[in-house]
Image (cartoon, rainbow, N blue to C red; front, side, top):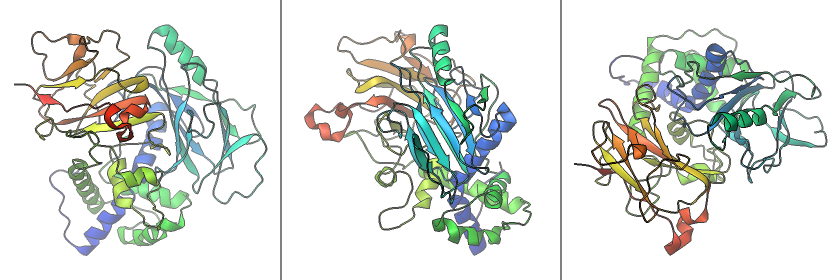
Length: 448
């Protein structure tokens, strides 16, 4: 990353910054594609999975350690690809989304709102301009691009050896093959605990990744005006691109802007509390296309979301629901040097389970490097509950005397952090429509 603050003064600087903002999701997408090959040896049209909960080796943006991740970079340059997913069996099921290079979800997979409705099936991903008849028995997912990522998850009953083995055996029933070649063996790559860094690079590689998109991909008509402007930063289809210090300064300036604006994302969710939705209402209404009914293209908000997140669902709130916590009850941002408590009321409206995970504000990653745990979850069997069924958790650099260690999530350093609270299988009592029957959670409270 560039050292020192990035200063943008001229009109050409502003054009470069706009183009970087427009291309933000492309950089996130292709940085991950490169990391799959570079760090894991997982090539396109193979299935990368993690046989263990993520640990400090994994630098994916805002990860969690209560599911097993699956990532497959699917290419259709040579023709349609088939992703064959198994039906949900008991607690085991594949869920996630198929996402294009702009992080637009093409379809969800698994669950009641997935293209397969949780019943499994052969998902046919077709390339731009595909005009052939779709064979019977396939779930058709057309794309305007040649690149798609399958960002998927599977939740074991627990992380015991037996339950983890059962989950891995289940996910290996997936198949990925070119249309018409169902007997071609699917290659699975186990990420295990190998070092893996798919984060977007805010340096001279930022525009290099955008150039890679321009040189190899098809594009949607709505992006044509931006592609035309890219010549101003030296990116022209069919011509070589060499990044310089100006490109690096633009990328650094964009990172500063997105970090500052992250403090104001989403909308308040619980009355009188600072928990916010991770996205604005318009994002989910548009199914993360960022194009509204009038044709307005909100690419600025898209950049804000995908500098810290990946793999948006087409249908938000169906199988999972997230909230962001960045401030305490006094409205102050959460600091790693302070201690806080959070009381999670009884009867959490999550059919499967819930989890609250902490992340470093400065990196969008976790404190995995330095601490034994980064989350509290209902899957933890040793949580200490109060008589009314609520549970109070402590967050900070140390645990005050008399508080249960099982309810402690440590923080490190002298920076800032934020939390994501996840509900898996959210129930109606979580939503405002529940009225006086609504389940409500308060803020983090700073301890003296």
